[in-house]
Amino acid sequence: MRNIFCDMDGVLADLRWAQYAAHLDLPTRFAGMFPDVDVRDPAFEDWLHTPHLWESGPICTTEFWTGIPMYSWAPGLLAALRSQGHVRICSNPGLAVFTHHAAHGKVVWCQHNLRIKNRDIILMADKHLLAKSKDDVLIDDDEVNVASWIYAGGTGILFPQMWNINRIYVPTDLVSWVMEKLS
Image (tube, rainbow, N blue to C red):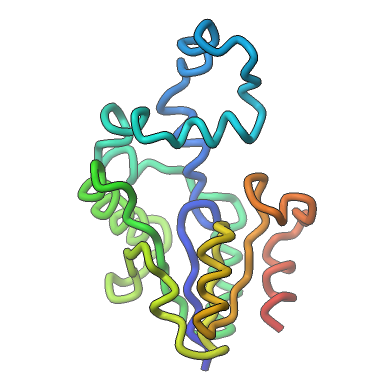
């Protein structure tokens, strides 16, 4: 039986949208400071992840993390994955400055949105430590997480998103795409 470890943010939950929504005034606030920055450019998203933007404000609350919207494909993806093995959510607890809020909020989010038991929620940054064999599968939107997982001996699937190398392959039916990669 496969052990399927599915990332939360970027695969099941739309953290990027929640980050932008929490800081809707950022483009306006910083446009004068950085007039050459296009807020639609992926480089701007990288800039949004600099620690000084996340050390206070909405992201440092449990409510932020419990309120992240679920992607429309998440229920179908989770159901399909469950037909292939034991599914666990494996998510990074976040930066130290908001880890407590993120960890608690992510657990509540998984319980509420996915109806998943606590024992199947794993919060850790070094996901690759869970990869023991090819039957251990990680589905993640982060290239480094997937590469580390594969290097550790597991099977990794890079979930297509606009911020990773698979952005040019984003299919219209993500559930079928993931299932094809699993087969």
